[in-house]
Image 1 (cartoon, rainbow, N blue to C red):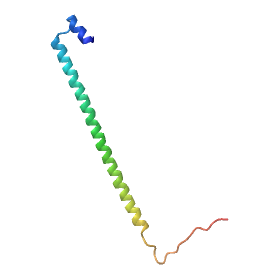
Image 2: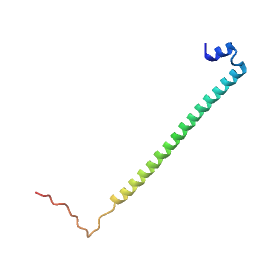
Image 3: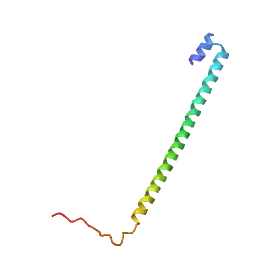
Length: 86
């Protein structure tokens, strides 16, 4: 037997008050679950936005590196190679 039932049986709490308390408790539980779900959705949305931003930054960086590496050397330039030290 629960404490609620014992208090009702002893007459220390009215049935209406117990019913209202149960209703309020259910509402609070529902709000708590709803807010957790909303927070989880928001976190997922932010993570997706972060992933997209990182992907765009990586694509932009690879385009920049690709354009630099595809540049042709000048005709009159001399290619110097390092001399091995013996």
